[in-house]
Length: 222
Image 1 (cartoon, rainbow, N blue to C red):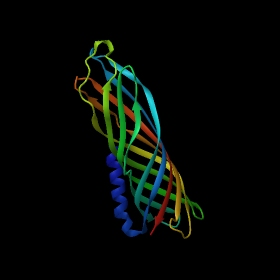
Image 2: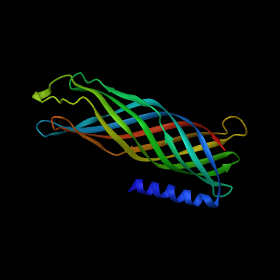
Image 3: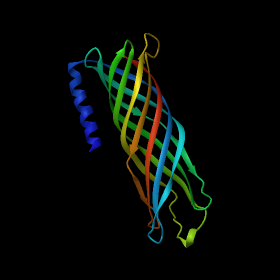
Image 4: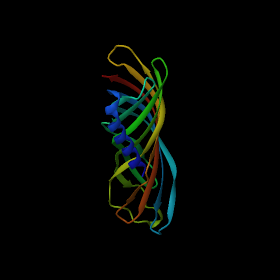
């Protein structure tokens, strides 16, 4: 439902753009990211075990393109796509007494709508509402110990889709001249949908993740 609302809002804004002055924005972003995840697993005895929450800190670069619509002299609405053009390891599980694995995330695309308001000359505040989708890769799964006589799985990897709602706030400072003519600082939160995986021995694993970003953006309007 949330995804449909975002798509409808962006589509409606594109239609409305024909009646207002608009411009195209492009640029690069670098984010300090924190990904927190918790999960569950079932044992051979069909018991569900809740895993402790884990988190990882990492840098996340991306590129973006927007269409910005000036509603009036103070209000504008930007419709954009942000893309993370790489896959990076965000966590390495080294349990020593269970299962080890490498977790990678990448190809993250976020579609968003971003209304902004001019609070003083060259300074805007804005909100962001969007939907993100990306790849989650779990590689090099190995069992380091056979706990309680459980059957070891034979699968060594799994590919899943991460997707979820994005929302945040930020501030933009416009500049005159130069290669880049605006700078943004923003904070966003992504609430990913729960991911589940049934491995080779029939155990069901689930993971529930959230990601927080503090992002510096430099961009160009034309």
